Amino acid sequence: MNQLSLADTEFTRKRRKTRKELFLGRMDELIPWQQLEAQIEPFYPKAGNGRRPYSLSTMLRIHFMQSSVTSLLMVRLNIV
Image 1 (cartoon, rainbow, N blue to C red):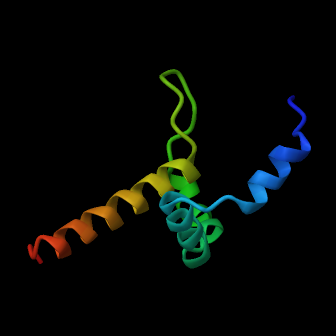
Image 2: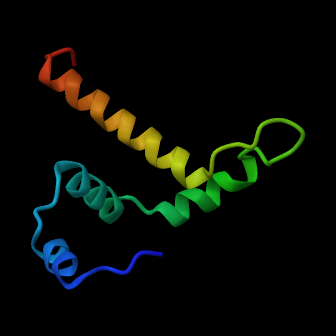
């Protein structure tokens, strides 16, 4: 594990958040992840003989991010 220097800690406090960080932070505020995961968990594939499935939280976040970006593009292109 790398120890942060004093300059690194100062930089991390003052650096500007990227659009990605802002978007993901806003998603975390709006979406009740634990409740969704609890409802989907019984039906989500378990690790077995084949390839291990991705974690449920990762797949949920990817799905929501992809659907929100798609809907934003459709609005921008006046497809809706």
